[in-house]
Structure formats: structure tokens, C-alpha cells
Length: 206
Image (cartoon, rainbow, N blue to C red; front, side):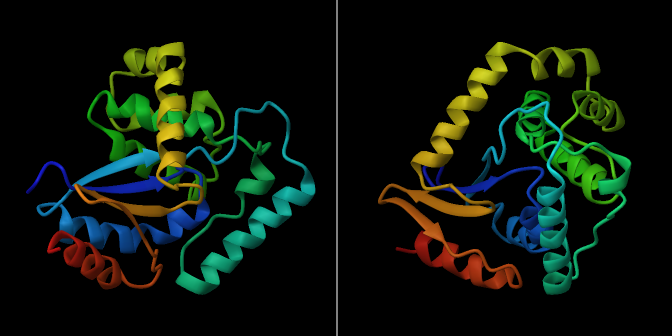
């Protein structure tokens, strides 16, 4: 496996299309993990905010959930909207993934956030929920909390956002293959892993 070749997965833990894409993405990673270096890049969907989400936006996002549910069969727990005070703020969950990355548990944290948000009606915009999830997946919680709230990690997060935008990662999920020839964006096929696997293998054989 050439270390210069990378498959970038630009995502946000609270992006509902990323949740819908998860089964296909898992097949892609299983097929390609020995052929290319797969790197997760947090995309930062919505900045930090303490303001409750307007009712109209809540209804709009819930309608996206329904659309994804109808299109892909993805499961959502709509109790989230009645049991929480939603905020349009995904940056905390992005930082949580990066804090978990420092303990080698990036993907475990992503899975925990998605499960908490979409299935358990818990709010990953809240740091206390994220700290509970760190405990659930067996992280060093004190270290996780210190990293989550640190200015150093926030600066790393800002740099990662900048990198995501620099390669064209403005929507989520987005996929890019980087080789010595440059960076190629891949079409995201929500229903077929094979489309992407074939594309990547073609690029690697150039």
C-alpha cells in the first residue's frame, strides 16, 4: 500500500446524510482498507451556538430525516425533537471525534455520537453527552474532557476544517482520493459501495 495514496472521508458526526451513508461506507472501508490509507476529516457543519434551534429549522431537519428514511431505509428516533432543546451546533461533536482520535478511538466515538443522536434521542451538541459517550466507549474520560475543551484541540479543528475546504469538502459526506497526481473528488453513491470501490481501484491503477 503506497503511503502517498489517501482516501479522505469528509464528514460531520451530526450530518444525517452521513448516518444514512454509514452502511455503504462500511463496505467501502472493508474493501479498500488494505489498498489505500483511509483518513477521516471532520467537516464542521454548524458552528458553536447556545441558541435553541428555531422551530422552523427543527421541522426542516426532521423532514430531511424522513427523506433519508424513505430513500435508504435508515432508522431515526424522532423523539429527539421533543426530548431535547436542539441547537444548530455540530462543532462540539467534531471536536469530540478529534479528542477520541488522540486515544485511537475516532471511529468508536463517531459511531457512539451517531447512535446517541439518531437512535437514543440524546443531544451531541452538549459536552456532557459527549463526555458520557467517552465513558461508554472506554476512553480515559479526564483526558478526553481536557482535550475536548482545550484551545489546542480547537486550533487543530480549525486547521482540519481549512484542509477540508481546501480539497473541496464543503458538503457531507464527501470523498476524495489523493495520489501523487493530485486530488480527485468521487461521486457519493448512497446506494452502492461498488461504484466507489471501482472508482478508487481505477484511480490507483493509473
